[in-house]
Image (tube, rainbow, N blue to C red):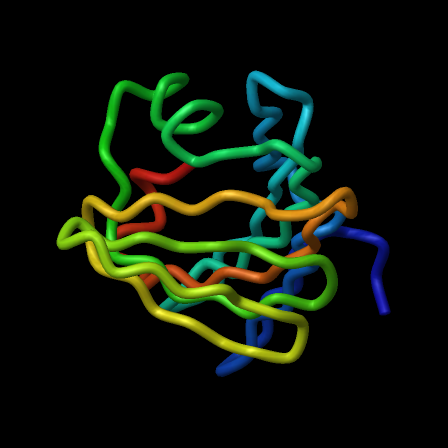
Length: 126
């Protein structure tokens, strides 16, 4: 396979979020990168212990969180919706949270997670 980040062939787009040019470094040094496919962007993030969306991402962009779909590979996160409901997300679990929610790493281990953004929202999250 080519070393380029994205490969286009009739009917096929292949991208590697780890080598994507779209990388974001948060205030605390956590990192998230993404590759954009035809109908979705796939992101991969390494979030340091203590990382919190509202403090390290929302504060950086000035925006509230959007609908978010993700999958935790390692580490743990806690999420809280705008109604005050909380849930802990462990490795191997997928989640979807509504706009206006918050998320943060719990414990002393970084959280390594994938996220999936419909293409209509992908351009906004870069």
